Length: 126
Picture 1 (cartoon, rainbow, N blue to C red):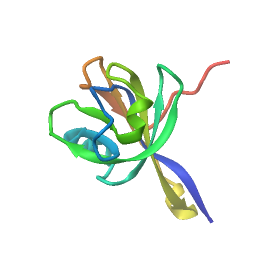
Picture 2 (cartoon, rainbow, N blue to C red; picture 1 turned 120 degrees about the vertical axis):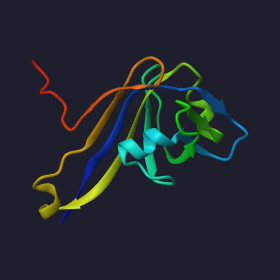
Picture 3 (cartoon, rainbow, N blue to C red; picture 1 turned 135 degrees about the horizontal axis):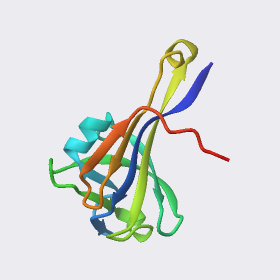
């Protein structure tokens, strides 16, 4: 049996562009893609912290070191420049792979610079 698990999370990135007439996708700084392990053309889920919108698209590479998070095509109606988003990618893993599996979690400052990364989320207190 395979289980869908969180592969990578980009937490609190700021949308830099919203391009309605660009071919659909989400352009992400190439260095951030490489660091997180998200591949170009990989399916991603985007959660807009500002308005609660949740949608699925795919990642494309933006200029490396640019800090770009551009929401393109029809999804541009769901996120505006300045909005904070969470970007997640998932992987289907079998029981053997699950044994030692840890996702890559990447956190950002207000300027889309990586502030830190980890492989686990702290336990939520009651």
